[in-house]
Image (cartoon, rainbow, N blue to C red; front, side):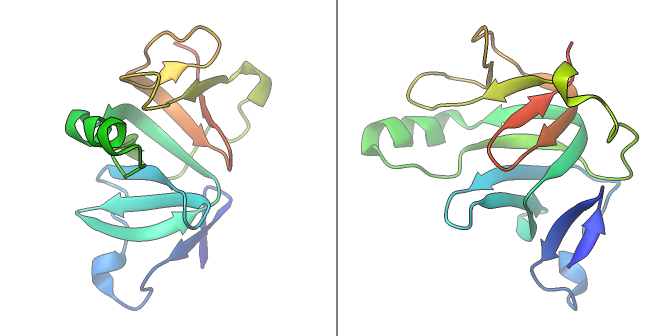
Amino acid sequence: MYVILYYMITKRNPDDPRYKIDTTKKVFVYKNLHKDCWSIRQGGLVKAHATELNLEGCDFRVNRKGRLKVLREKRKNVHAGVRGYMGESTWDTYPEELLEEVTYNPYKYKSFVMKGTEAPRWFANQVRLKPSKVMVTPM
């Protein structure tokens, strides 16, 4: 285990250089329902797992065919997540009450939406992934 952005991240294979996270490249983060954490994927490999995480320069991704498969089979699969940069965060002290919550439900929405207004959300400067919610800085 090692700490990035003050949160515990568990590396999958700490001795294997292929599993080192390159902070100059974007990662894809999705909710791992089996481990109840966030899985961090880069270059096709799940390189680490985290309970909380901050990302910068983000976009929200929903794979259309993956979502249609969920609707057809009524069974969840990995088809949506957040893409962004990991690194030294300067906004860890950003007041949480100023952040807004984003949600995604494949049965209700085609994209990530703002929880209060259900307006689609495609991008965010910063995203804070908490154990049970996704928070973003206001636009």
